[in-house]
Amino acid sequence: DSGVTIHALDFGGKRDPLAPLRLRRLVREQDYGVVHAHGRREDLALVTGCAGLGGVDLVTTLHDRVNMLPSGERSASIFDRVYLRLLPRFDRVLAVSRATLEDYIKLSGDRRPSNTAVTNGSDLTRLAGLRADPTFRRRHGIDPSALLLVLVARVRGGDFGKKGHMRL
Image 1 (cartoon, rainbow, N blue to C red):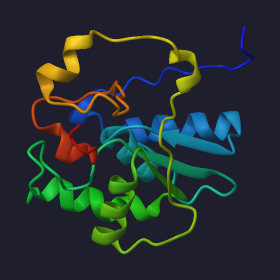
Image 2: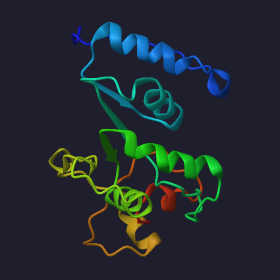
Image 3: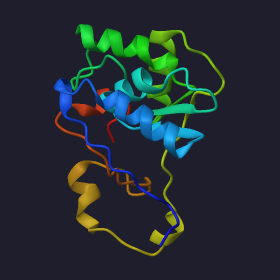
Image 4: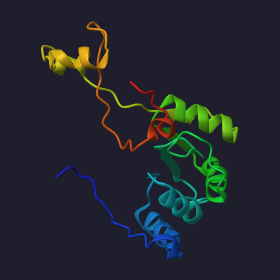
């Protein structure tokens, strides 16, 4: 038992206008100090339901670059433009990469110091002594002395541009 209580709040998709109100009621009943959302639908419910509640910090994590298609091209959709205007209503915006944060700041002008990039780290000491297939580097034209890292993330097709990761 971690001591953390999880409250499942089912969102019924785009046709669930009461989700923000259910979330607001839960936040008030539980007297939360911080509420953290991890997706566009959840961000919308959190901001529309809980903005203005005193004593509650609203935080979101950007997992993708804002207004970016999987190909790395800019999106012109109205939803993406509205979403970009919604994000500064959070008390803090976290981004999964420096490129994602810089993209958000450039597009929104939101330069608050509370916004930050929080990148995942890997403990490489656990990998010391492991050896990969010796033909891998040769087959892919990789220098034998280059450090290789593995990225575990939702990267589909051309999502490298959208995520803000560089191709290895």
